[in-house]
Each structure stands twice: as C-alpha cells, then as structure tokens.
Image (cartoon, rainbow, N blue to C red; front, side, top):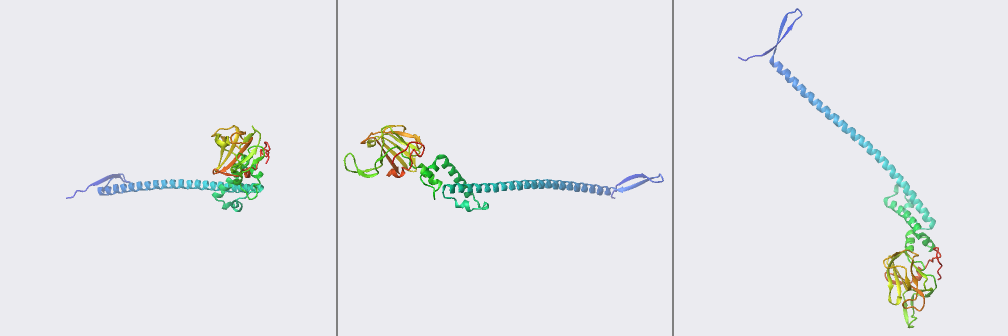
Length: 303
C-alpha cells in the first residue's frame, strides 16, 4: 500500500475553533519547482539586461568616437583647404615675381583652381619660390640679369650661369687668343688651349666661380699652375703664376684670390694663361668672360 504524506496547517477560524488544513506534499514539490524555475527566469532576465546595458554602453562609446572622428576630419579638411589656398597664393606670388624678372612662369599653377591643385603642383610652386630665394641670396639673380638672361629664361638658367666661370680672373688685355696660332718660341703652328691675359707680376688671380682646387703645383710649360673643378664637368686652369694663395683640396668661392700673376714656365712675359675645359676638353674661355669685378663691386677688367 502506497504511503501518502501531507502537510498540515493549523488555523483558528472566526468562531475561535481550531481548524486543520492538509496539503499533499506533491503540491509542495510543484511549488518548489515553480520557485526554482522562476529564479532561473529572473537570473536569465538579469543576465540579458546586463548584456543589453553593456551593448548600449559600447554603442554610446562608438557613437562618441564617430563624432570625434567626424570632427577631426572636418578640421583636417579645413586645414587642407587653407593649405591649398595658401599654395595657390604662393604660386601666384611666384608667377608675379617671375613675370617681374621676365622668367618663364609655371603654366600648371597659373591655370589651376584651388580644387585642381595636386601634390606635384604644390611641390612645383614651393620649388619655384625656393629657387627665387636661392638665386637672390646666392647672387645668381644678379648674374642672370647682368648676362641678359631674363626673357624666356628660368631660375635654373640663372643658377647654371652663376656656376659657370663667367668672371674675369685677372685685370688686363687679351694678348693670346684661343685656337690655332704661331708658337712664339719656334715660329711653328700650334694649338693654344686657352687665352693669355696680360697683367703685371703679382696681380691677384681670382676664382671666376665656386669650386674646389684639385691641383696647385709646378706643371711643365704651365709653370706654377692651378686647376679648379667647378662641377658639372667644368674645370679652369691658370698658368705662369708667381705664387699660390690656395692649396689642393681647398674649396673656394667666386672672387677669392687663388694666386698671383707671374712668368713661370714657358712664358715670354708676365701674363695669365687661362683655360676653360668641359670634360677635360679645352673650349674658348672668351665666351665665358662676361662679368668683371667692377660689376661685382671690385676692380675693372679690360677686354
């Protein structure tokens, strides 16, 4: 016979009599099971609510970061626009300065609008400004203008002209030309690889352009000679000197005294033998003799 279990509750009714209420124990199990299920449901709800709060916090953080990125992008976009406007202004200024000197302008910067300005145009404009500043500070602008390099020329032409040996190395008259001539010692035809500039013994010989002294010593018929490397394959040579003012390996600038006129070596009298060589091939120096120290604030050289 199956046993049955009951739970009794004793209560007093309105008449004051005790009453007994019996509840089967199975109902208690059902109640406990219901409470357990309810607790699990509450736990799940609480967990879901916590996850939802975490997602909301993460979403709010992402939205804040997005707003910050949008603000930064707007500021960078404004900076970029301001930079383009500044570059356009710089390009216009460079074009105006170039036009003032009669130089070729950069057509890309003249016709481009603010929206069309590209990176290479930015660099081109700034390079043009830097070139103008460099030519002004280095004296290349003065050299280019004095040589007539204005119309249809560029700042690069000025810089190349400034690096060329275009300054008279000594004051005096040209007494020996470049090319074929009669050798004064044997009366036979000979090739003269430079020009002879007549001057008195001890007259200073100046550098016609910036460069590096590669030779300063006695050299056969040249007597005491100096060789200067000006870069770009251009060298100059000075012969029949009486003494040196520089040594091999020394860097020099246009107008520096490098030696003194003499009559050492194979010479009929005091003068400077002056050569210009391109890739070690002698060329006529006379076409380079464009400037005198008088134009640069120094002595005047005859021609």
